[in-house]
Image (cartoon, rainbow, N blue to C red; front, side, top):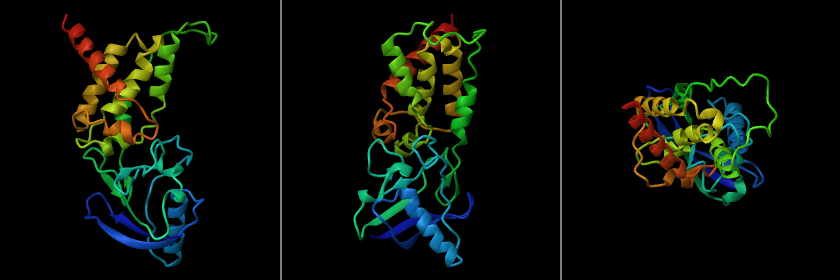
Length: 248
C-alpha cells in the first residue's frame, strides 16, 4: 500500500518544529514501527536525516513507542501500543499524521521523541518496600484476597508510556500515578509505607507540572493496557486518608 505521512520534525527541544510530508510503500502485515523503519532506510539512502522515534521491546511491554497517530495516542486501535499496531489498520492512499505526545511535562527532545523522565521521578519518590522478609517465603504462604490480587495485577500492567497524559486535555498523570500507587498499596507488602508513598508520589507529580484530573476518562479510553480510572478514585481516597492521618 502507498501512504502519505505527515510527520513532526523538530531538531531539538529549543528549536521550532514543523510537519514534513513523506511517501512510503508499506505492506499490510508490517507493524507501524516497521513502516517507519522502511521510511528511515529510504531517507538514509537519500542522505537525509532519519526520523527519530523511541522503541525498545516492540512487544507492547516497555511503553517507549509513544507517539500520536491521527490524533490518538498509539493510534486507532484500542488497547494497543504503537509497536503492536499493524498497517492493516490503514488503507491504501491514506494520509497518516504522526506527532509526539503533547504535554508540558513531556518536552520534545527531537522529532517524535519526548522526555518522559518525569514518570521516573514520580516512581522514585514512592520509595521502596522496606518490610524485612528474611528468606524468600513460599509464594502461597501469604494469603491475599483474589479480588485484591487481581486489581493489583491489573494496575501493575501499566507500562508508563504516557498515553494517558497525551490524551488528557489537562495533561494529567493521575492514571499513571494511581496505577503505580495501587499495585503496591493493594498488597500487604506495600501497606506499611502506603500513606507516605501516596503523599510523596502525588507531591512529585504536582512538582513535575502535570495538570489536574477532570474526570473526562480519555486516559482510560486511550491506555494501551486499559488501566481503569477506578485507580484514580482509589488514589484520591488514599491521599485524603493519608492527609487526615498525618494531621492527627
